[in-house]
Amino acid sequence: MPKLTNISGKKAVNVFIKFGYTHVHTSGDHAILQKPGAPTLSIPLHKEVAPFLLKAQIKRAEIRIDDFIRALH
Image 1 (cartoon, rainbow, N blue to C red):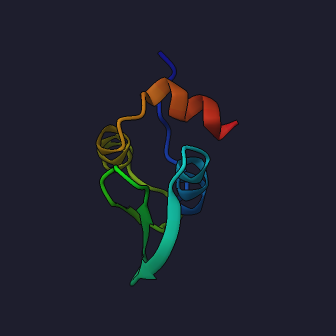
Image 2 (tube, helix red, strand yellow):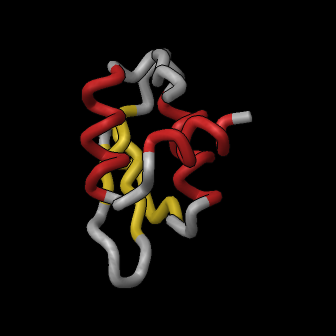
Image 3 (tube, one colour):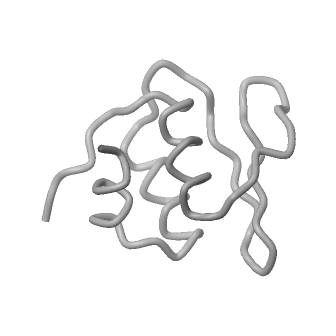
């Protein structure tokens, strides 16, 4: 399985948008994403998002990590 490396918050938001999420607003330095029938996600808009934080949000969104990594490219 490919490894999830540190990526920027903006890049992460763009990948979640590919999976049907919408960036509804920004609260402080976190992007709030929503998708009908799915949990709301809060993604920190940092230069690098720690892999464990990103994995937690990917799991909440019920996206496979390898699908997420593929969508990065």
